[in-house]
Image 1 (tube, rainbow, N blue to C red):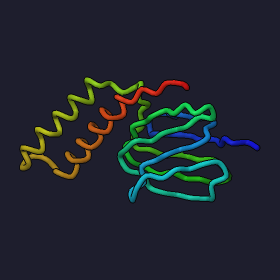
Image 2: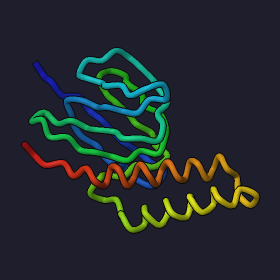
Image 3: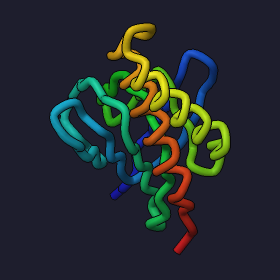
Length: 138
């Protein structure tokens, strides 16, 4: 019995992942959820957070996702994300600068849209957290 299914992770800029996995864990807007092989049809919004792709050998890849949607249909998963970066591809210095910039803008509330600044702060903090997770093969 086949234990894997096809997953595509797509952002407006590129296809981030296109391959077979045995599981997907995504940050849903009301909590994280996991998709396994033969999952029923499903669609959900996803928020800024950690997404994990688990391979058949147990290896997990970590991604910083910046919101979007996930669709399960015919044992295939498509993630349409606003942003998505593999943990190994995250520029930590750039993420730190973005985090510091957002924190400073929060202090100067009169000149910035606070909701947008909070989202930028969440994205930067998420990128830093995910960058620290360097997966290794079992």
